[in-house]
Every structure is written in structure tokens, then in C-alpha cells.
Image: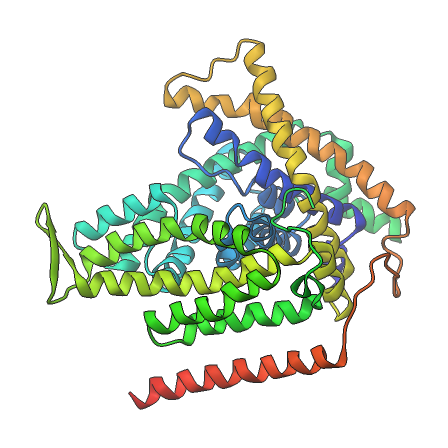
Length: 205
Length: 259
């Protein structure tokens, strides 16, 4: 419970709001340059990495609530739980020091992508009748169905084709951002190295 | 409010307490999950949601939003369920696959469930200011910081979209070529995402200080400039809606067991 409390300072609350706006703003860049990626969870992963798993989970959840509010993608709320798990995983990976080297960050992205694909598929298969309402992904699902697979498998297959690559790129961007972020700001969160947390503990004594 | 679906107005629907409208949204969600077939679902949409949107003076934006949201589902579901559900009434042959009447009906039924559920959510968002909804939820126990996160991100995301566009144009003006092959495009993400994310994070510190200067983390009850109007009748109606939802869920479980 103490860890939970510590994650919700005014600073991290302000970061969470900005992170959700980053999710939406950054999500349009791949479209503008013509890349078949979503990149709509950079902010969520960033909060998980900088602040911790609880804050990451909450950011993911609220991000999908906001997507629904804006009317850009009203069905997003159905995947809010998956977004929360993506944020929580980011916090856990950072605590285990996986964001220090680029290749481990990429591996974290790969794992997150596979988990996200497996968790999203049943929602598409059972709540939305096997589709997501996105023409591109639904065409891939249709191709798998045509090859003779059932709704759940086809959605898992579609997810594992797009999500791992998307999350690997997301994690690499977050890794690069961490390198460029001023030390002074990183020290205000201190989820990754434990260094800042130690400093804070010393101050309290 | 900029960047949301909300359409301002002074109708009875607009003036309902946000929690009453939220309860209605959940009722429509329960309808979407429990009504037995396409006919019932479409009837509920036409008899309940359409007149409610007309009451709020929102008929046109409501129907337009519904159309935008549901069209891709209708297309995808008709194709995927239509061709890959076995049935006895073939309608159409295409490259060895058969579009069956049963499949088409199943697809349209799922689409109408989605229409019912998302239609309820769209009606809530069209007729309710997000800050009013959050205020009502905060009054019933939601932490104020969560309301802050939701409302702030709704307010600032249009500016972030603009910022992404500005960065894209600025980098192109400096000679960044975006019509290149796909592997080079991946590398483009560094000069585009980097400035966007970094400049945003630097903003956070200013925001946090502004919040602290206004006693954001001070415990205790906070007052609001917004006033919420509630009535005993609406309070009662919300309990009634809750009971109705439980009854519908019970009824559909009973149906599932007895069949």
C-alpha cells in the first residue's frame, strides 16, 4: 500500500494527464508518415517506467476512458483492462532494470505485445463478434477465418502479427526518451534504478 | 468543450443529473447484452434511444455519430460472420465461400448489440459536459485526482495533436524526407517522436507546480464552481434503473439455464 501511495504525488498525477495526451498526439504520427503501427501507448508505458506499475495501470485504463470521451474511438473502453495491464507491465519491467539496455527494452516490448494480443483477442472474439471495427485488422482476421481457423484463434493471430512489433517500437522510443530526459526530471520519479528512491528514503530519515 | 462530443443545449436531457444519464447508459449496455434477437435490439434503439436524442435536440449529431461508429462493424461483421458461419440458406457465392443467411443474421445481431451499447455511451457524451460528469462522480467518492487526469487530458490533447503536426512540418521544412521505404520510415520516428514526448514531459513540472500552488494535494472536501441539480425523483429513478438492470441480468441468466 505504501508503494501505491508513493506513486500518486502531484507530479505523477500531472504526468499521467500529459501522458494520455501524448498517447493521442503520438498516435497520429505513424499515420502521417504511413507506418502500419498504432504507437498509441507511448505515454502509458512512459508513466509505468517512470512512476511505477500502479500509476502505469491507471494511466492505461484512463487513456481508454478518454478515447471514448473524445468520440475518436468510442469502443476503446472495452479494452481498458488490457491497456491497464500494458501500463503495469511497463512498471514491472522498469523495476527489474530492463529499460537500461536497448535490447532488453525491445524484449520487454515483445513480451508486452504478445500478452496484449492474447488478452485483446477474447474481447474482439466474444464482445464484438470477432472484429474490432478497424478495416485493416479486420481484413487480416478475415484472411485467417478464410484459412479455416475459428474466431478466437484468428483474432489472436491478427494480434500477434501487429501488437509485438508495435510494442517493440513503443519500448524503443521510450528507451530513447529516457536517455534524453534530463537527470533532474528522472530523479523526481525514480522507478527504474532505485537510485532516486534511495535518496528519498535517506531524506525522510 | 473542445475535443469532445459534447453539444451544448438546454434541453431536459441536458439538465438531467449526470449520474441519472450514466445509469441510463448502463441500462442500455445491459439491454445490448441481454435482449434476445435483432428485432428486439432494433426496436429498443428506435423506441428508446432515438426519441431520447430528439428530446435533447441531438437527433442529427446522435444519428451521425452512430453511423460513423457502426458502419465499419456492419461491414466487417457481415463479411466475417456471413461467410464463416455455417448455415442452410446460401445467399451468395464468392471464390469458394458461401454467404449464408444465418451468418448474415448473426453478424447483424452482433452489430445491433454494439449499436445499442455504443449508442447509449454516445448519447451520454453528447448531452453531458465531461466536467459535470466527473464532478458528480467525485461527489459520490471518485478521487479528485482521477477526475483531474481525465479532464485535463481531454482539454489538452487537441494541442498535442497540433504539436505533432507542427513538429512534422518543421522537420520536413528542414529537409526530412517522409516518402521513403518502410525501414527508413521507422527511423523517422526518432526526430518526430523525440521532440513531441520530451517537450511534453518538460511541461509536466510547470503543471505540477501550478497545481501545488492551488493546494491540489491538500486533503479534505473541495468546493466547485459548477452546480449540480438533483431531485428526489431522479434519486429514486436511479435506484429503479439499477433494479431494472439486475432484473434483466437475472432474467437472461434464468433463460440461459432453462434452455
